[in-house]
Image (cartoon, rainbow, N blue to C red; front, side, top):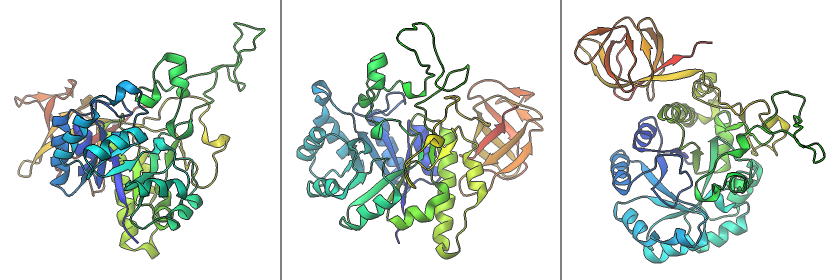
Length: 409
């Protein structure tokens, strides 16, 4: 029984570092072209190289997405780009299109290539086709059940790795191949520019009653008929492991660094706990409680245990549930004075009760009794974005630990 890779999203360099510090075995990211998340900051070649060096120095991996559905003009520059990725020792690229795959194979034949979920792979024959062409890993379509995944893994070679999504937003269209955004606002989801119209509010209009908008359900606010709950499989780690899935993928390159740290940390703790003693493993509620402290929708298990029903949709709102704010990142800690140097991320006040957590440690709660600015002046509030302050901590902390605060009801 092999320990699966925990694969985390990296929308920028800080998120990459946060993911790795908080327990990811690998990260996936996009350069400034060819990826499917134009809404995230993405990486220049120099930033990719810095990220690769950071990851490799800690024994972790970096995969770069090149999984757009390209038009002719999108093919320009691929050869030079993949040569640079190869030179800076990126661990693999993720593609969906046979044309891009062909260009990479003839340009840098030794570059490992993973097949994106955008390729909509749902059966073992398709996997064998790609395996015989040199693909090293398949990211399966989200529309497969655990039973189907188990059957696929039994029928393919041992050295073909299977990766599946285990957490994050679910696309309403088949494995993300959606034309709705393109049709409605001219933004092509298959080229990285999705406007997320599946999250919008819809009403029904009858053609002979123009201007009369009827809610699809009896709700005067309308409804969100295409809005899926978020996938969350943290309660089912044993089933995923025993199915033979080699990489557990978390969605969310446009999510915050706080989201990445919180979700990765919980999955890391659950996976590690399972592998300590699989026979006596039991799920701990606090892992789910921690995940819920990051921005999320209600959760679903997607297609893993059967096709989603009406219970897997969110009909009342497209908003996220946000119970906590990320208020500070620990930069340094002085053991003698007990003072932590903090980079502010949201406003903090004297008297605030905060939670402090870090990788591989249980969170603790304390009240902010004193704060000082960079000049040593005592302050009552830290209002400025990324302001550097000092706080007296009740317990020792480390760089990269996070301070969060519950939102007021």
